[in-house]
Amino acid sequence: MTQPILITKDLRKSYGSLEAVKGISFSVRRGEIFSLLGPNGAGKTTTISMLSCLLKPTDGDAEIGGYSINKDQMAVKRLIGIVPQELALYPPLTGRQNLTFWGRMQGLGGNILQKRVDEVLEQVGLVERGGDRVEKYSGGMKRRLNIAVGLLHKPQLVFMDEPTVGIDPQSRRKILDMVKELQVQGMTVLYTTHYMEEAAELSDRVGIIDHGKLIALGTLKELTRLVGDQQTLRLYFGEEQSNENLLPLFKDVSGVLLATTTNGQIVLTVEEAEAILPDIMVTIHQAGLHLRSVDIEEPNLESVFLHLTGRVLRD
Ligand SMILES: Nc1ncnc2c1ncn2[C@@H]1O[C@H](COP(=O)(O)OP(=O)(O)OP(=O)(O)O)[C@@H](O)[C@H]1O
Ligand SMILES: [Mg+2]
View 1 (spheres, helix red, strand yellow):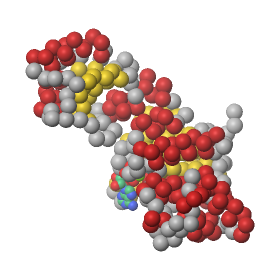
View 2 (view 1 turned 120 degrees about the vertical axis):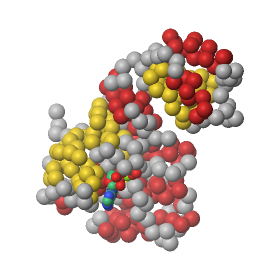
View 3 (view 1 turned 60 degrees about the vertical axis):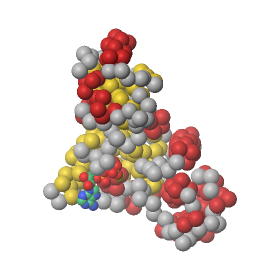
View 4 (view 1 turned 45 degrees about the vertical axis):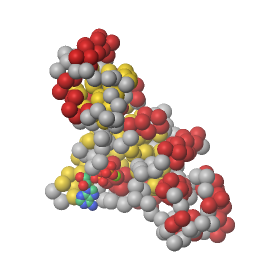
């Protein structure tokens, strides 16, 4: 088996007295899409920043293509591309001018740079808008240009730090498809997100990160197996119904392990959905409620996170 392209070894980072990353070890295989999934403040950006030599680890090391992030930073930087969480673009400049600027910063120039600018604009679907100023771009277009910057020098491994935050579903779709296409072209992707749907769709393997620690790592199948046979019931009573007030009703039903609300729905973690559903229906009937819809969900990454931490991944 070939050597993993990335091996992190007990990586740590403290900001003063705050230990943001508390000893993280994992490896990423060549050609893989590997996601770090975790809530706000989990340590995703801090980890990515250390791996891309933008931030010095307090302790530990990582090897990228056999080169140490502590000792061989020049060699590491040649192998990696970075798509930062915070957009690194100059709004008064055009898309092309931004790419040319960043390309020069990466040591590219002349015809090679212009060819690469054309190629990455094509890759991210912005050929027609390349001559427009970035200040006129939509949020999704800015995100795509931000990705193009990270691809300019044909990296073997690209770090994408929450590349879909704050954009519409259509732009998100484009970006997710783009990430898959990068893999088809042979690139390795380390992707961070707090959206479990994205991690589930894209990743060959997922590392779940919380409070600076990797609390689980594996394929989607391996991770959901951790939850065992638990299922999720989603109940919807319509917009006019206040879900918070209904929670106590369902918490008391035997077999309900956890009751929360999200997106206007009541979400119940249960032992066995089919066995418990009749009792739930009786509860609903007795309370005089009108149930609009009910969904039964098999374990997913959200339930894995809930199972491991007792908290929901996001609101
Ligand atoms: N420059 C800094 N100085 C002090 N504390 C920091 C700094 N950067 C991050 N932190 C803290 O370190 C922890 C991890 O932050 P980090 O940005 O790595 O999390 P994240 O998983 O990327 O979160 P998000 O999903 O919000 O981007 C947080 O508690 C954060 O407040
Ligand atoms: Mg972050």
